[in-house]
Structures are given as C-alpha cells and as structure tokens.
Length: 151
Image 1 (tube, one colour):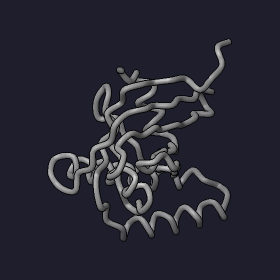
Image 2 (image 1 turned 45 degrees about the vertical axis):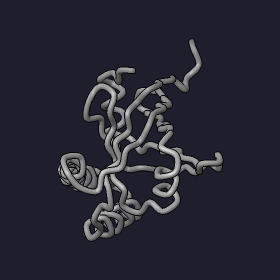
Image 3 (image 1 turned 90 degrees about the vertical axis):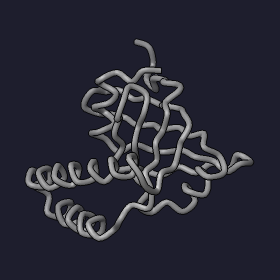
C-alpha cells in the first residue's frame, strides 16, 4: 500500500495511536507523539517509554495505527508489521527526526496563549529532553483504511 502525501503530512502533524497485542491477542493502545513517514510505505516512531508495547512488538509484530486530523476532517487506520532497531541507520534516523520535531514544538509553543497548556507543554518538553530513545520502530504499512463514512 502507498501512503499519499496528505496521509504522510497528517501522520507528522497529529498524535497517532499505536495498537499492539500480545501473542494471544490481548490488545494495548498508546498515544504516539511522533510518527514520521520515511517512504511511501514505511513509518518510523521512537520507543521512549514502551513497556507493554515493546513486549507486544517482540511477541507479535502486527500493529495498527489510527489517527484523526480535525482540521482536514479525515481519519485513517494503517495496518502493518513492525521491526525494532536499537542501533544503525534507522536508529540514527529516528534521532534526527526527534531533533526536528523538538524544534517545531518550541515554535508551536510560542503560538499557545493558554498559560496552563503552555506550562504542561514546557514540562513535557523538559521530560523528553532528558530521555533517550531505547529503539526505533519501523512499521511497514500493508493496509490503509479511511475511518470516515462515504459521503
């Protein structure tokens, strides 16, 4: 399956939800703040604090990603297979993407007027600044579905 340029952009701009499951099918879903399409069928995310998610990925690499872009009024589910990298090209690429996204977050924070939201975002940025990724997770997209009704 081929990711459109619009889907790639929506992945980059929105929080996505990564669904995994244990070998015997017990589900787990977590929000991912950084998902980036690196090709027409590959998405790269970083493992910062995965516990259940990482164990699930190791036991069962089948995953689903779901996200909604409220500005475009579009929503998708992507299904595929995950591969974990703790070093090498994919790991280095995820470090580069994290730097770019951190800069974008700083720029975005300037536009936030609500003080409480700004303070929460600052705390999250501080927390992430001191965390190092444990792995890069590459997802090979095999299926793409719209979550929106046909109009």
